[in-house]
Image (cartoon, rainbow, N blue to C red; front, side, top):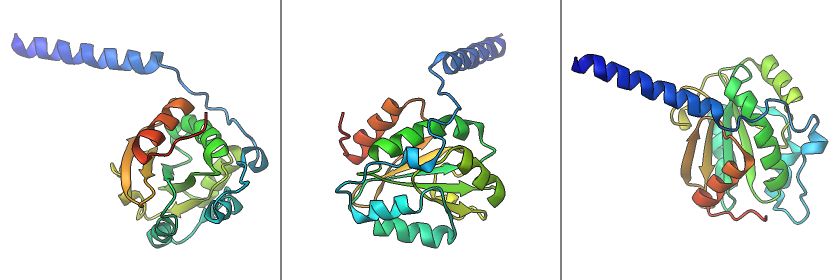
Length: 195
């Protein structure tokens, strides 16, 4: 009898969790912006390292973990947001319009980087044509950078680094809104976006 009650409680909990997930505001999977120019942030007075990031907008960069780690080190002094994604990932597709908006609004003060993992180069390039972003992504076919994104399995996963270059927060799963993204950025990195 106790086992049957436990199963019923577990099933009710799963149904409730699914209902909450379905009822919460689901972001549109349509891209907010359809070209790099439209998504480019205002870089007036921005750190030259942020200008260099925008100069590599929508590119898939080689170099795996060595290049990614060197970039993180180079960005010390700035808050950094690094998002792990793949073209085949439905939640990534749902989250990308939020990342487009966040990078357009905050990319003059915050460094954004992408990590394309467990993907083919051609499919990733096609995805970025559909969902352009004003920052580069590191191509990670051997999952070497992905290992730095706990939990390593699945996507999207977003790492937040503070101005000291420390990983201060990991968001496993997609953001549901720009407001949620900004709240986490502020809470964990100390960055205060202009309202």
